Image 1 (cartoon, helix red, strand yellow):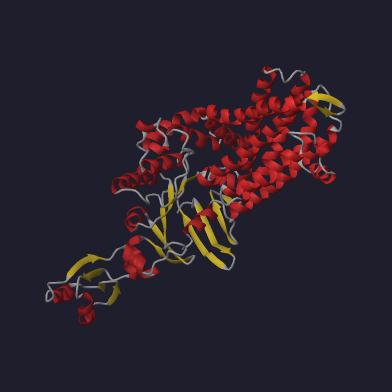
Image 2 (cartoon, chains in turn green, orange):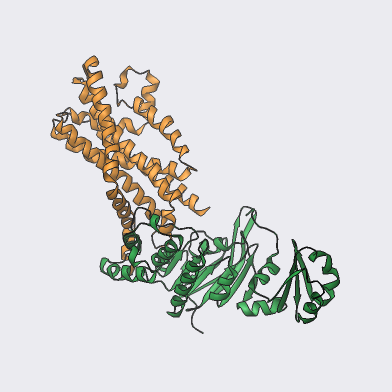
Length: 306
Length: 261
């Protein structure tokens, strides 16, 4: 297999007594999309900050393109493209000027930028907005401009922190399509996301992070297969909680969350048969997905304190 | 490595960024930076000047209007640099997250802080230049020695930019800057002899004044307006250069600490 674009080994970061990232190791190969998923406060953003040399790890190593972080930070960053969680576009500049000003931070020459800026705007489907300022753009356009800005130095590896949070379905699909194009060009992508459909669609491999540790790793399909029964029947509506006890023997595992009962099973037929006796209850039979895996591994309680 | 040769001047694209934004907003910012000091000058210079007549500078009786003009240009250099390195730099650092996006490129935090410092001193120099031009047109500046005030006021801009960046690094919000302006800069203007000679103050206030950088800027610049040389140029220059150096080191350290958190 080819040399990884980036690898990190046993990254650990403590803030005071709190260990935010604890022994995280992974690598990304050219053309590969690695997703980091985990609840709020799991350590995703701190991990990205360590990869960028913005936070120094208490222990562990980051290596990319044959260079060490943070010693060769400038050489590594010359080959990285970053889209951060919150848009940080320059509000006083037009789309075009945003790309030009950002390109200068990489020391790119004016004629290089003259070629790349129109290409970047076209890639972001923003050619018609070249002279508009970010304040006049929709949320999806702003994110695509951030992506075009991250591509101005023709990076080999993209770091994307929640690239589609807050976007409508059309804007998300356009973003995914563009990211897939970049992967086909041989660029690699590291992305964090809260959207399991996004992770399942884009990522070749996933890292599930919780409390600063990698608790599972693998392809989306393999992760689901190894941690979950293949089928799920959701039961909801008035009386759902009351009947669950007699249906429990028909499932491999039962989880109650709020007013809904989740039956995890290898074969749903007997359960669906039994449910026909309760026509007043609503049920949904579906294959297990990444969201089920995520909730199984990280629990159903809300993490808003972080 | 030649492909990274530009990194030695990595502060330049950041400086250029600020310059390009400013070019779009230059007219309103020019009015604020120049009109205010001139209004002070005209109101106090002509109003108070009529009451006061002349004051004493290095043993020479001089018109109050020019005394005030030579002090207020120092105050303008200080205020313009401070305002830019506090409010505007803080907007870019904390509110717009411009610094964060720059730090994802090969540009380092040191380059960004250096660019902000030089930018604030440049803006200060720009205000000072415009005011000097208007003062010349009004007949307040009559001697070529004032040309020498120009680089001295740039140095003042650098010193006050460095100091302001310390407060920028410590700030949680804009409110914090009010303390610096009202508790540090405003008293300094009075104690440093911008508006009136300091020899009528109690002795301890005069001693305190000797520790304030603005006193040394005024001591360097004011005599030039009266076609005289400053009496202790080496002392005053050293105070400004050392203050700038110490403040720069501290500002950089505190900013780096802020960004590591």
